[in-house]
Length: 102
Image 1 (spheres, helix red, strand yellow):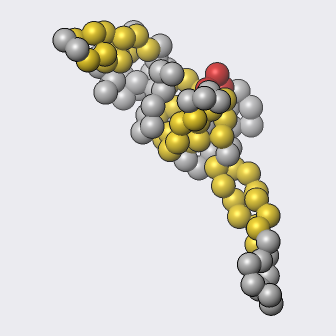
Image 2 (cartoon, rainbow, N blue to C red):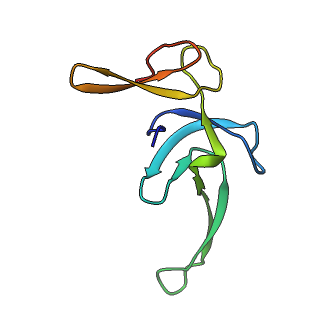
């Protein structure tokens, strides 16, 4: 997957189209990621003890990787990601401005 935790991404489809945020969590096996403050879902929590009230908690839900695009930290544009091998390390770079992303 070309998007990692800590990257800035922008939504290309759905109710959050055009909004951007930071990636908090990545699920590699499901090809999904969680963006901070976007794709908010409501979760109903049952009370743990007798006499307490239940609550409704708002959480950032996972979204498919195909619905977001990486924003280059250098040029700020939507970027396609390429890879360069330097020595024994594999590094990502922006195909528009040719700057390293990591």
